[in-house]
Length: 392
Image (cartoon, rainbow, N blue to C red; front, side, top):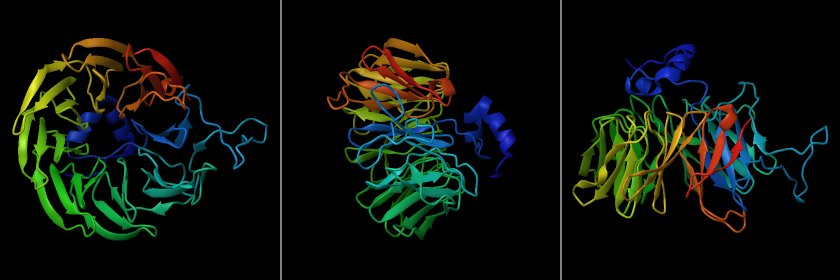
């Protein structure tokens, strides 16, 4: 049953029904990513954006690409005398790499990035240059962020297992065998590694040895990582449920949703905010052994909601496959603002707080799509005003 489809067929299928492929158990994956990953790096902070065949750094003030500078702080120039920008692309013997995941910061000079193409690359951060063009061979495709600790690297494979590698030599220490694959980053808490799998199970493992402490069947594929909040794990599943789980593996509370849940929830002030693939948004009070709605679930979007909601002050910000962004009151669920996008919003949003260093006077949220006209768009949190666009 679990068999990869031809790439051409997958691209066509994902264009019309990506979610259906995920839930069908016969899962492959497209060569062209349908979402990117953002993270803040450096001082002053810059947005590092991994998407498709490249990784770039973007200035959060105006959306411009960050200029590449030498050790003296001077802008580096290309052969035509134009300023060079911070951009990484792979062009080794294996061809261009494809990126879904954020780089891992090894130290102030080195990044480590895992590519979909079963390779891992080391990047000279100051020079924006791949140090090993042929990469380190891996056993599977990667669409979820690996988790790095001081001594270990935990790498999830989209069509199979999770492997624990010893740093710095990347020798294999142990493997978690799963029949369906892992599309989410592992979570490490007090020596226990929590792994959500498409095989419906949440696994708790000894992070050092890989010994299984428990596994829990959540009656549906798990496509996002659990959130650890005040001593418990929170996760949604394709079994149309949100769960609260004790660290010892017992379900403490659950809540039935209208549609399959892909993205991780957000938890703020004892309230779980989440969304499903039918476009419904939820605000659930955590009352110990049960969830109760803060307000009734609302079908906000006409398309699937994959990205984790952003909570900022009293505002809840939602992105959807219907090419819309929504601002809701997190107290009442009332829609405050909506903004049209050119492309579908599948990647998680990035919240930026006010910063004197960056001259950002009010909170902003940055949204990614895989549409060339709007790879990144920044909005104000308060009013949804469009501030800038990064396009290619």
